[in-house]
Amino acid sequence: MMKIHNSIVLSQSATTRPMFKTPRCRLLSDSVVHNSTMQPALASRHVAVIGAGAGGLVAARELWREGHKVVVFEREDQVGGTWVYTPKVESDPIGIHPNRTTVHSSMYESLRTNLPREVMGFRDYPFVAREGGEERDPRRFPGHKEVLMYLKDFSREFGVSEMVRLETEVVVVDAAEGGRWKVKSRSKGGGGVEDEIYDAVVVCSGHFTEPRLPQFPGINTWKGKQFHSHNYRNPEPFRDQVVILIGSSASAVDISREIAGVAKEVHIASRSVADETLQKQPGYDNMWLHSMIENAHDDGNVVFKDGSVVLADTILYCTGYKYHFPFLETNGTVTVDDNRVGPLYKHVLPPASAPSLSFVGIPWKVVPFPLFEFQSKWIAGLLSNRIALPSKEEMMEDVKTFYSLLEASGTPKRYTHNLGGCQFEYDDWIAAQCGCPVSEEWRKQMYSEVSKNKRARPETYRDEWEDDHLVLQAHEDFKKYTLNGVSNG
Image 1 (cartoon, rainbow, N blue to C red):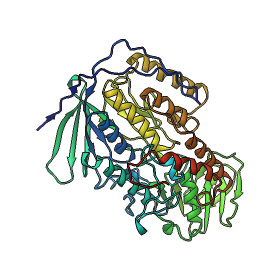
Image 2 (image 1 turned 90 degrees about the horizontal axis):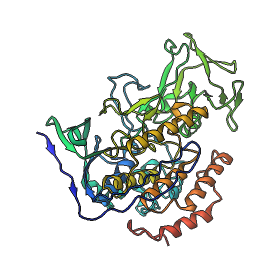
Image 3 (image 1 turned 90 degrees about the vertical axis):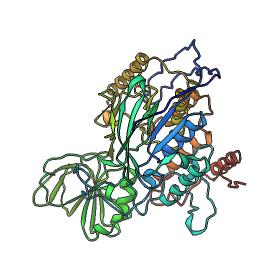
Image 4 (image 1 turned 120 degrees about the vertical axis):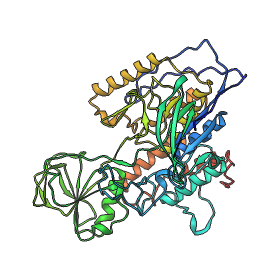
């Protein structure tokens, strides 16, 4: 039986959209400034949120705050998304077999955050150390379990838990009549597929589940073992082996050091170094940095672009993930091409379907939780008519201009959503659309200081730092927020 949820139009008059010019940060193009002479009545929509990770939880809260009715679909048995650690791994260790058993989380056992908790938390629910005995992790760069507990605290505090349907997988999202969306979901408890109609859908399903793999000659016939870091949990499977690890991300750095403690040799292949690079890593007798792989051979040898040859037991790919929305049917209005999700206006809205279809959490190399919060506030305000959008044509033109800038600068398509160089300008642009305060200055400075400290102390930056003055500023700011019942005094 299909359920249809009607939107409600409120009698309250809408506020106008703030006028703000998009900053020219990195490759963000200038925004189209939209003057709205009409002020439609505010509306309460029925909204489906897909995923109950950090993005889905804060999206649900902001939508609810804006007056919308919200249902959050979560296929696992608890909220938290990728922060839910499980020792389980997929049946295919490189994650490409279409019929493999799938595991959502990519969390490894020893993971600690590479951002301090002050920077990482939602703006009005600070991620401060809480009492709770051995269950809690008071470290400034805590382990993954503490992040999950924070998200569960957030969910309970704001009543989001009551909006979540656990163990319910969305199998199809398809356009329905009148600009609405048909959502087909299936509960693990049985009962078949349920059809419902929603005014809007917010996709918060994450992008750390579908492995992205490089290709190089000979790899398809190479006889050794291959893993993707999605299925890495601890270093034990690599004991006494010669391991080639491909990648240079934060997780690649952590995992390479962890594996070096048990492996015979670790050879890191990186695109970010010159072809002639071959150097032993400081502090390690068994770990080397190479340029990328040239080719692999049937006898187990792997040749690097620096000319060196390694007889390896295992290749471990720390090469990132693909955006993957198998449930989403848009008749081609949203596609994924070389890891570009598009077209998306400001990495959130497909012009053809905005604002009834939106995405939270597409950008990467960012401080994720506050960015999710800004995007969610924007989406919630757009759906209520409190905030106006440019026309579909203007949004599409903005996207095309952005793509042209990327191409002119030589930026590969797969880096479309990399906002590492301008994330705070992006956040502040969205804040201006919403009429809410921009990112705190201490948060921006702390992020910069942590980045510098990471380069200066790559092994110990999580436990040694020199920005206590910024920590004090953050905690002074946190005193404004008492919702989580934590004393910051």
